[in-house]
Every structure is written in structure tokens, then in C-alpha cells.
Length: 297
Image (cartoon, rainbow, N blue to C red):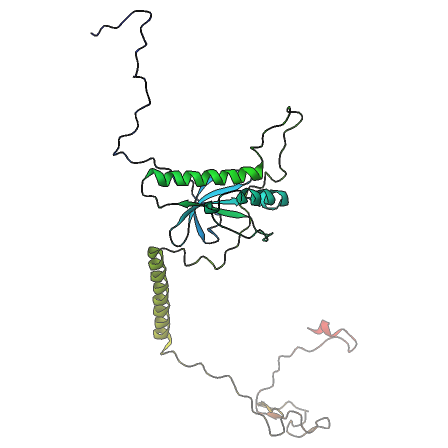
């Protein structure tokens, strides 16, 4: 066993005084998580920057990790739906962006777009090579984005005087959806990766093959089908009248021959020839001539 000093003035046992030992020289730098995944309500792209993940949010806006077509990384601060509809909040956003260094503002939208939410891309952020410098640049860009959104929310203004009455709250704090945005030109298909482009091409090719096979099967099924007989042709005379032919077996007694024109037959009317049987199962009416014709059916 090791004896310990029991004197009252003995220093307490513990680690030696001095700065804590840092990570070894060969240890990798601290890895900062990319953030939360995007939601369906988040815009896929603002300006020339594609959004990758959420870094933070408050009632004034959102912070996104983004990159452009060339691979340049940035942090995008975008107003919410409620704050974007407040003219005073938009002015605070623009004022906070104007106070940032010129090299820190990579891009922003036009302040004249009253129907769109304001956004700003902050950087520069070098490519993540595992060094501490890249992590520090990203942290600095995130802090600048938080300062812009805090200026809109006014949550870092020092309190003057004593607290009295209810706390102040913006009327738009409950409207926390991302603000309106406009994408032009459309992001599809530039957002697709090479693997996605290959999958899309294979899907279109498969659809074309299926349609071709379906048409070939339909041709095989109906190539020997008989033609549909045309409908009956009704002969017409030269004067435009139609001839209806009736062939009776025996004419009823006491009736005139149907071949002789009656007194009421006029030229140009249909000519009836007795070439068919006359139906004899017509029910005879039992009512008087003045009865309702509907009663005889």
C-alpha cells in the first residue's frame, strides 16, 4: 500500500496544476454534425445554393447548410413566413446583413421582392478536409447567421429599466414555416446525381419497352380478326325519297290493294309495296274516340 500524507496543510491529491492536456497531435479535428434533415416544407434551393440540412431555427428564420454547383459551401439564413410579412422585420434583416463584412456575404436576394422571404448566404467556408480551420469557418458563418436572425427577433437587445407587465412578443411568432421562395430555373434534373440520372434513364427505357411489347401483343391478337360487316344500306330513289317494302301473304278482305295509290298519297312520299306479312296481333282499342290515347297502351 502507498502511504498518504495526513497533515492538515498537505495539498489535496489530484491532477497536476496547469492547462488541460489537449488531444494528441495525430488526433483528427472535432467533427461538426451536418444538422437535421430537410423537411418537405423546406425549399430545395435558394438562389444558386442547394440546401443540404437544417442547422438551427427560431421564430425569425432558419439556418441551412448549403452548397452551390461548384461545391462552394455556405450557411444560408432565411426568414420565416411570419417575419417575412412584417416590413419592420425585413428592415432589421437587411440592416443586420449590411453590418456584416463584405467578404462574409456570398449572395442574397433582392429586397424588392416583397412577396418572397429574404435570405443571405454566409461564408466563406473551405472544403471540409478534417482540419480545424474548416470547422472554425463554418462556426463563424453559423454565428453570423444567428446574429442576423436575432436582430430580426430582437432577443439580444439589453433590457432598459425594470420588468413590468407582460413580456413582449411579436405577432408573427407562431407562423414559423419557411418563407415563400421562388425557384427559377427549375431544379430538376440538375439536382439529380449521376446514379439518379442512370436510374431515371433505365426507368424511361423500361417504360418504352413495356409499351412496345403491349402494342406487339395487341397486333398479334387482332391481326386475323374478321372485319366488321357494314350496316344495312337503305336504298333511296332519285328524288330523295325512301322506299319501304312490306310483303304480305294475303291481303285482308275488304281493303284496297296497297299498290294502288290512295287519294291521300302525294308524289314524293314513301311508296309501300306488299312484300312482307302484315302483323295481326295489334290490340284493338276498347275506348271511345274521345278517351285519352295513353289508356290504349
